[in-house]
Image (cartoon, rainbow, N blue to C red; front, side, top):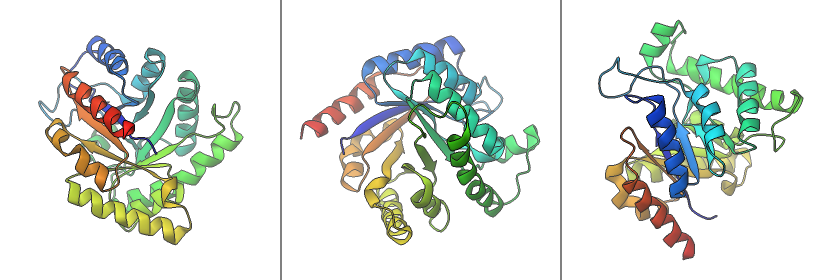
Amino acid sequence: MPFRVGVQLHPQHTTYREYKDAVIRMEGLGVDTIWDWDHFFPLYGPPDGPHFEGWTLLAAMAELTTRATIGCLVTCNSYRNPALLSNMAKTVDHIAEGRFILGIGAGWFEREYREYGYEFGTAADRLRALEAALPIIKERWAKDNPPPVRGTIPILIGGGGERVTLRLTAQYADLWNGFGPVETFARKNRVLDDWCDRVGRPRTAVERTVSIGVEELDHLDAYANVGATHIILGFGPPYDGQPVERLVAWRDRRNRG
């Protein structure tokens, strides 16, 4: 499998024009994927600073790009009815002409649940809701008119829970997103391999992605050596392109062998 690279552009402490320009610029730098996130408040910096909603941004990103695949890293399952989410995903997929991945996870940011009126519950509650939602989403894609561009949409599951999240990934996902450090990613990757074996899916059926920060660019080969084939660099404004150029150059060297 060729190596892929992407960027997650944090939609906080920015303006829409700045974000729009960043999306266009990152595609021009040659990344394979461009992601936002599904939050309602900034995750760092002033907690009540400017912030934009991820799914309406995805529709704009679909129109702003022509080559890169787009997605949300990751959608909080609890924020939307799964049948509605499947229709939203199908719609963005058509706007993007098939260049869309549905990234999804169980959710974790309590402030958002509290201020937007969602029931936070327990981690186990949120994981049960995710497990119930995944087959509904897939079933709706088989029923909705029109269907997704490719008949279905790749699903990425984010998270590292070894008993539930990685089992659901092995059962339902086409991609998995984990985090560092390298040793942690390697361990979770092995657990996912074990779950794939247990549920009867080929290990190669799940693309292994890892989210990194700029400070981890020196560890790209290390992540690749423990199984990552898709590296996603996350950062906020001013959306500096220099680290992205370095990431793209690394991908090209690895793919040339």
